[in-house]
Length: 328
Ligand code: AHG
Ligand code: MN
Ligand code: MN
Image (cartoon, rainbow, N blue to C red):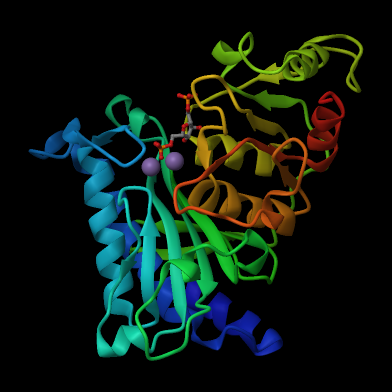
């Protein structure tokens, strides 16, 4: 079943978010282009390597970060249903501010390329997106308040994983649907209907280089994972790709936990609330999983800034609850 047929069939039952399709179509169009760029990057001039600048987070931008950012911005601008966007790669939000876009109902927050340090080594990367209804009046340009909404107000969210195949994982409140890009037709086709995250698992995912510098409860939980005294009576397996989307996707399918706590080099956590934590938390919860800061639900945080960060514990419900029990 194609993405459009899937969306139309689910909408028939729910009737909500009738205008969402142009936004979802824009995401598929941009991601097909980015997928193609990633596949051929090493064969093209000026696609691999550093761009030569830093983004607002002080991180080195890769050329493909910028290429993906432009592809998604253009797709959202042209789709007619998005009034403005916020992106990891741009310091300020962007109001498209045309007559049509000032009357458009949605804003999108996104990470155009997640895990971009993995591009040059041919390892999976992703795009993460979060869609909200604007809070400002129709007819006016988008404003910062439209962007700073808690994750529990998302109307749809998801990610594209550029892995051994390109996959779109999305929820618009009607379960979590996984679609695989068929490169012969450039169509996303339903391959993983109604995805559910296993309630428990034995895979843990963390940058263990940080184990000695984060709060002691984290090291205690990882010791529990590695011990004979856990619910499997034997060590869990450690898995860390360094692309959040890929690490999360593995947990979604197999069961597992991903942890990025606050660390001295990132005192509020490394991952960005609006376009990394919130959309994945939305997917996790709709699939039966859990996402917290270690202490509170991610989706209930009231954001104060476009690029704010949060400590992130996400994955199988029982595993996230267990990890939280180690924190004081
Ligand atoms: P981005 O490439 O969008 O900046 O995100 C990178 C993120 C995330 O994908 C990954 O899990 C994490 O940073 C890796 O951080 P460490 O290298 O500190 O483990
Ligand atoms: Mn990212
Ligand atoms: Mn990124």
